[in-house]
Length: 335
Image (cartoon, rainbow, N blue to C red; front, top):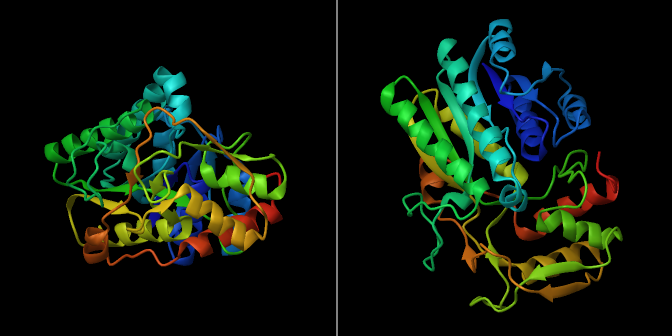
């Protein structure tokens, strides 16, 4: 079975590619390398002892994308490609809507023309409406609060409409919570390409001395210690969730939505403490004002994924921090 992975050179994509190889899949990768590096895929090839086709291509290019489907016997697509920064999406929403939504439309058109109807889509917990009730189940009300989240929500609705129009489609939407960590080898991990937007890459850069301190946005939330609580999931556990989704589509038609998280919420200060323990470094931090759009708590109910995908996150917060720290030490400047 050949799987096309869009955005396969990225943080999550590279880990998914390695899991696919280790599970016996043939893969083809499409990435425009706007926020990733080929080195990640070179290392995946080395670790998996297998080469695979890689195309430097923007998904808006329908003609070239069709050629890739003609050249390879693609059975399914894992669609990860897209811009992903909440902050950047508020600065340049037009670019986010154009890139994330139009590229997905092009991909779906090509898949339909090529009679390829199996798709796993990378969505996000940002599609959920802010709520005081935790944990979040898949049937929670949807209402994204930033342009990035809205692109994911619009694509989810698009996929539902596509499936409703043609029941041949097998579509699985995976709503990620907060992926962190790295492969245990330290060979692939999260390369921020400049100043990190996410908490753990910034935290690990403080620990290694690239930045003087961490900024924590708000300590007056109604949580255990006043800082925001999130559901952090190891990127390898997340990657394995995609393998289970892909496997399930062999026997099941339809459209399904699954949360991928641990089901446990950790505060920012708890994460800082865990990282400090595994790195044996004091993490300097400053409390600053809340950011617009941030909620007090957000963590998943993963019962559906446990029961229907046969998947469960296995790695705890300390292992997530250990692997992130190993990656940072071995790759102080990223790839």
